[in-house]
Image (cartoon, rainbow, N blue to C red; front, side, top):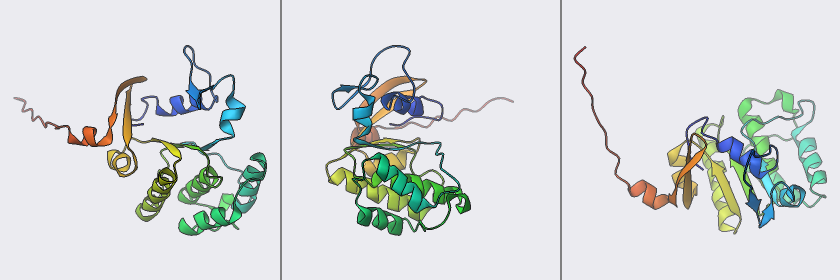
Length: 198
């Protein structure tokens, strides 16, 4: 899901997760109405919000255990530990001690650790250093290869090119185009130079 800041990417994701209600229209995931069957939908969705709020006094490991309990203790601890290792995240530290980038890593692990059918990721590499960004994109590609759907929001075209098959472009709250990523890349971009008298 590609578009400039303020285009409506986050709002769309919040409507899909029934965090906010639409003023008109309906949204569906897995053939279920997002407003009427939101609980059933969220049991199959991993979500990484763009504005991540965490419990500062918890250790990351405690946060993951809380999330796992909300999922009915279905998580694979070995996979969760592997994600932490790949992202170089010390889960035994309190969240308040973390930098912005390490807090983002906590959000990535929480979204992926249950191997949900659908991942909704709002600018997942925001605040991460380039090497960790590449690790996150690799984890996204692995989820995709595993047959899971990833709804990836960004305003950075190279990231979208690296992981996506199709792109939806949103501008001022309107979906203006949907196309395969290779068709988007193939389009010729024209540069225009304007010279003014003063």
